[in-house]
Image (cartoon, rainbow over all chains, first blue to last red; front, top):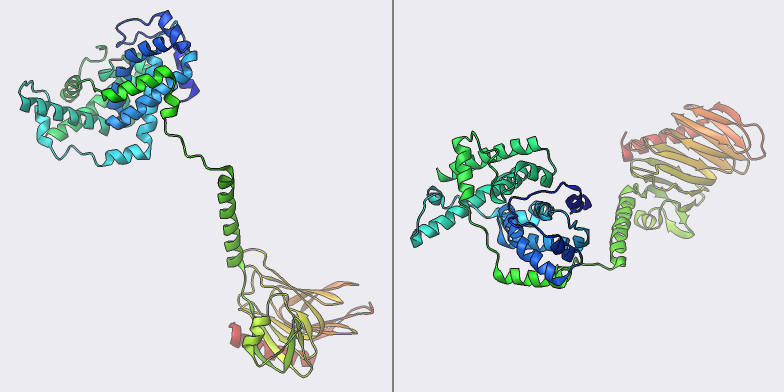
Length: 208
Length: 267
């Protein structure tokens, strides 16, 4: 991660990240700055699911998501002393995660590991994506359909994938996404609209 | 979830949004989560990352150096021009102090190289060539250091020395681009494509040119361009050099050499 990305936490305006249900207390973040074990543990518990979930949605692969998550926590630990206790650290953490995933996704190893994955072999699963069911068979179909959606996300170009995951999975607004990926608000709006259209087309092709 | 941009979605976009909304939260492997948490809290995360293979400094230096050396060597070998070979000869010669019969081309080839000092015995004669670049006719009593082979791509300069005797020279079809310089006690002869003969005696050097043009520089005097059909005699006592018509004997020899060169090297 670039120092700029690391420093973006302290430079950006306070952001009320949609997923932060409880505010971070100054004491909590001071503890993280001091690398106090208890504060680090609480910080981990609060942020892990967001990091792992975002990494998985961006990379579509559990081992890769684990690698990315580990890398993100390493970067957080290294830069903990730079955390501003008066600001919400979530956008900073999501920026690191997005950048790490971007690097990982571009690496040849990740591309090769994903090259063999195809959802075209089981197209009939797609039609049941939105079907509510409680039977074992229905549950199986629902899980497989989720795999198809995830695969469709993976097929999106990197810039569109980031925006759609940050918006619809992470629940961030366009302005927050703009700050994380380093683009303008209007650019993110257009990108999000394109991403939805592209994802819709991929899903339509898949389910036909 | 923000709803600021959810208005006016197309059916396809709405389908995508619905699909995204149906996604579960990905769950990490509990064992991975626990390990990572412990390492993060303990500050041990660094040690869990796979260390980049660190090669010793000499390995990192030696490999590029070795690769560069091999490259230089290969370029040097490929750049080398053709070797000298004996085309025809009669009598005997001494090459770098080793006596050899001029009727044994293999023995001569084994001794010849660019810079070889060749002494042709009296009543002997030899034709040497260097690929299609240049051919030399060495008469009896001649002592010469053969020019080195010119580079194919760089260092096209060939330089040799005639200490005594008569040598006829003719350039071949592969000569263009090369640069032949011949030294005699009295002169420096520079050639860019021609047929000529150099005769070195204790009194001086006589240059006879059959074709083309040769730059002849007296060590103690002037520089002249000697063209086909002419000669220049440069004296060892420092007397003024003499320009005139080509000597009849040289003309005859050079015509013979040109015919031989055409046969051996092509036009």
